[in-house]
Image (tube, one colour):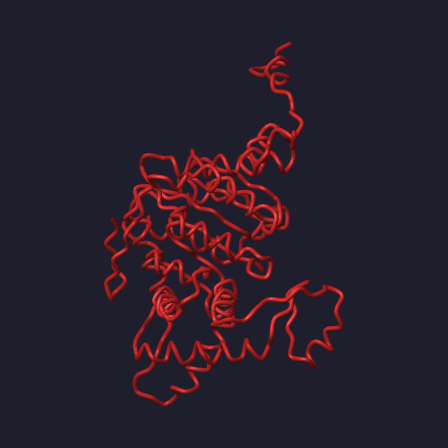
Length: 350
């Protein structure tokens, strides 16, 4: 039976296969088996396939990772760090909170197992902050905020991008398990386009109060961030994007394609590959849940881009995705990019 161009035989040609844990034997085998399963398992399998194709593309796309959510509290710090260390990510864009909590741990402080049902009034009296079912030490947070003000103050008067701020903070660390220190050691640029909206922003505010009345002081220039990311987009043959959650990192990375097109009055190129792991849904109309298909209408994602979305919370989905690409050793032979930044934000990329 044929209806238009679709036949009954073609629609019933690919049976769903049961996930066989005895056969899978590894994260790679498990995620591979997801491709023939259904619902979000299949979407994780598709996301892994997009990531693999992104890394295998002979045009060497620049891979940009966008991070949002309580990822450090969730225990994903080393997963993200290992992706950076192995050259599976070229550029990091994150909320300030993710970067701050990595910095907090790099300074020797910890996240603790807590309860979502705790008495928060009691926690407040004890100077303990809660992130769902995880606790952090408010006293150590305050100490870290003041440390940030001190370090950034030592950069001297001037206008800086978030990348420059994160580079300076990262350069002071010695923790081999730190996302920031690993990015610094590997020459990976780290951006936080909404740095004000985090505890790093609190530290910068402390610095601002200290410098009130001075003729010259520190200033954070978010538009310089825009320029620097556009430089990366323009000097990359292709780009591939990975969104963990949504928020400002997702929108900002996508908007960079529009900015690049407008700046040179050319057709907006769009990302060649895109995948996202999210729990937000599109029908509320918000950015975090918006589909990658919607981004095509803006030119942010190429019309023929390879894309995938898995609606699975990051503490579950990211280790599966990262475990797959690392287990298949997709970093083997992959050339690392070299970023040479000029003081005005111009970039030489090789």
